[in-house]
Image 1 (cartoon, rainbow, N blue to C red):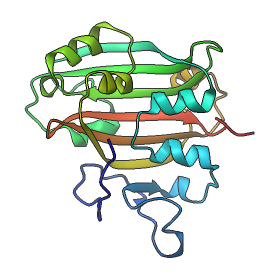
Image 2 (image 1 turned 30 degrees about the horizontal axis):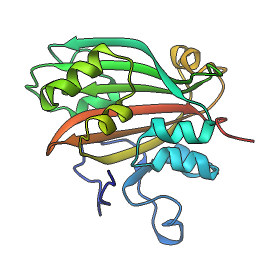
Image 3 (image 1 turned 135 degrees about the vertical axis):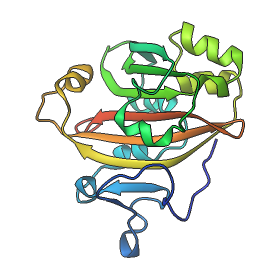
Length: 212
């Protein structure tokens, strides 16, 4: 599931104001595939936070390793939409007009033992691009997307990564169980399956997560 590095993010579908790719002496800090917002560029992140922003693998499995507990999901919202009205703002530019239906899914990745809320995620899923068994299990169960990819051996390619720092809305602060004045680290990326774009995903977590 390793994603291939791209030389440029121009034309990626994410036209994020104030975002750029670091180069020169800082080129090792973030890979070229990740576009970094200016709000984030000066923030000194620890290694775990960098990994969470840059990973090509499944975030669920990474969280289980880092937290040392099983990760489960809490579905906050899920609805099949016949148009793009309910698509999150960060995803609109990456969804082609004329899509017949999308699944809007909002979830919290949380610890099964501690019940700690680790990551809040919003997904726009082009369900017609997914195998029927995968699609049905995604809609009807609480299995994390990453575990479904592994279970169904679905080859995926992740690209167009954009990361920013932001202040949370009251709703997101509630989902992450953090104060409103806490910075949130956010990344958005596209997922391709079977040669087609199948998902756009945004993941948000507290800047205090895994900070000792």
